[in-house]
Image 1 (spheres, rainbow, N blue to C red):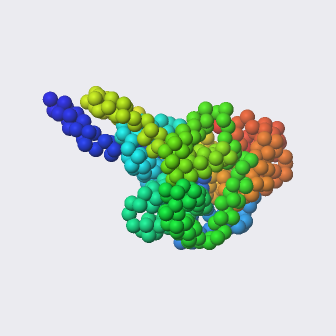
Image 2 (cartoon, rainbow, N blue to C red):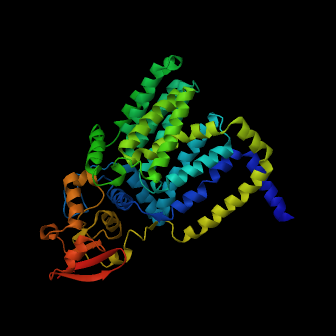
Image 3 (cartoon, rainbow, N blue to C red):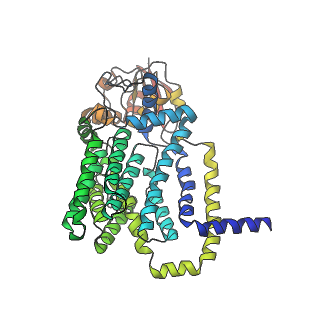
Length: 467
């Protein structure tokens, strides 16, 4: 009887607070995502945050490699680095992973707010977002891009208020400026927000019914521009954004063009396109501008794909919440409520094992055991993904390459990739140890060299030390 009464109380809570329960249903999935850390950037960002906090100043030159030691370096996520460095001090990589997923959870809350405004049903919105999480699962890792997702959605929310005349316009403009300041210092991609606001301002002018809001949208654009300049590097932050893109286009998958033959890329794009079609049919100028810009951008750079998908979800959920669907959900509300409870219990059961390895570096990518065996103070010849992990785990070892593409430059990044596939003696001239992927050209080349000794290996990599 007690168990049944508890279930009934929970069911009553679901009926009273459906939007909050919808949001709660995402948390176990995000907790599962926090179980493994695969992004190479995250590791050197944590180390840089620790370095910044210990010296109370930003690094200005490369402190981690032997191939680019002393080269000028501008940080494009100094604020995020400090946050994850502090989290690492508090609770290690587990705290870093959970903190990053908390930002994703905040972004999903904004998605639900926008869906609610457009009269979506909470159950339909929850299902839509769950599908999107599965499609975007690999993008939701611990990295500064999660800040971008939240910032874009907050700007959409504020612009929605501005265009819909909800709240005092000057306060909304000021809020957009504040978001821009926080965004640029956490991750220097605020120029994207400026572009989106500009697109919305142009859209409001084209549509007569919203033309009266154009001046306020232009004011929001100026506030975003001013906020973007409030960073340690000033206007150079714009050039820095383009340098990152230029140095990454050829070598980094997420900077390459969308592969429409890959269902994992095509399906999230279709969600964005579907949202755009709905926005056009409804003459929703805000979402027409946002989704047109993000969907087209996604075709040119895969990393833009999550923005189109997340921004489209409120409209997709709204369009799917037809009168027939709502009537059906209402008529089956008891059955659906009772079905939601075991589903959430199942998600909690699936999430429970993650508590043993929160924030664990992906064991299929990083050879923690071999990194621990690196000789003290060694100059390491390594593959691109390995560099960031070594910087965090072994700060005494200098790497040959890592994922700071804007600092290394396109030529050095491409040269490092070629050296792993087809090495030459000159590529390892300054190295005293080498950690290379098993089966790579570098591993085979080193195995034939008399001046290199194989120390150990695992399924991922092989460790060599110069004789």
